[in-house]
Image (cartoon, rainbow, N blue to C red; front, side):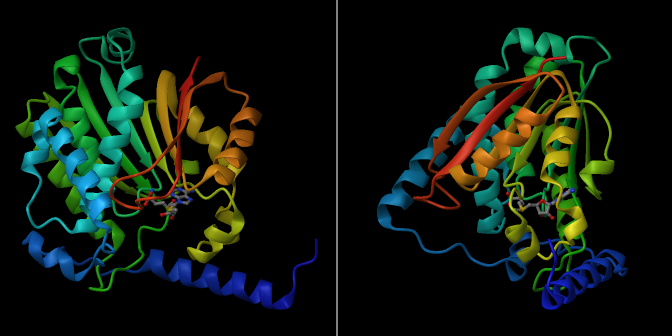
Length: 301
Ligand SMILES: C[S@@+](CC[C@H](N)C(=O)[O-])C[C@H]1O[C@@H](n2cnc3c(N)ncnc32)[C@H](O)[C@@H]1O
């Protein structure tokens, strides 16, 4: 298919901008006071009273179940809290039911075992406080296990309105997650924000989260990413290969159209796997009233 000149110029421009962002030096430490983080992030849109009541009720339920939630910094920007609460809520409802005692024995049974987790396309690691809170509640199941929390992002150099980058905030959030895990009794935890392409990442992970992957070219381009990085089928196969046998993948899509397109990519994967569950959800925090699709897959061998 021939590509028009304006399309080609736009692609070149995206590519150039992307390269410029990634090569940016001068990392700036993020503010030590959480309240000052507000300057970097937009406020959440106002919610209708009914949606607010639902979000409050779900928050209270999660607080009762996940004590580490009470340790989240008071000044954490609302958009970061919303991302994290959403992941905690999704993991609690859709992943936890599959993390049976047998599953734990397989993944974290050996005394010197390492339980690795990965968040793909993590942006600024905003979901990681929620993820660490979820894992902290499972500490009893992984008494002697070293926990490795990784989060990877291709466009880590993108800047916020205060001039700091995703990687700057992401690293600070990962460090905070590490201290949360140590404070909640996980015997050993390492956390890393990885700036790079997941297609170049290796390892075996017991748990992978992949929220809102780009399945169609247009959103990928609007996000400002070069065309060469739009490889949804290769990404699906590679992300599956990053799971340990028996490992679980939680994947969330914007809508049913994207979930269906992704399902075709899963079907094309050669590695044996099975779809454990697929459900339409209404997220209480980020996009109340929307219909996201949450899928859980397991690698079989
Ligand atoms: C729609 S955003 C979702 C961000 C975040 N997971 C969320 O739910 O808010 C998709 C993210 O995946 C990242 N991404 C795309 N291709 C990637 C790749 N090959 N490796 C790592 N990250 C990638 C993009 O840069 C972008 O931040």
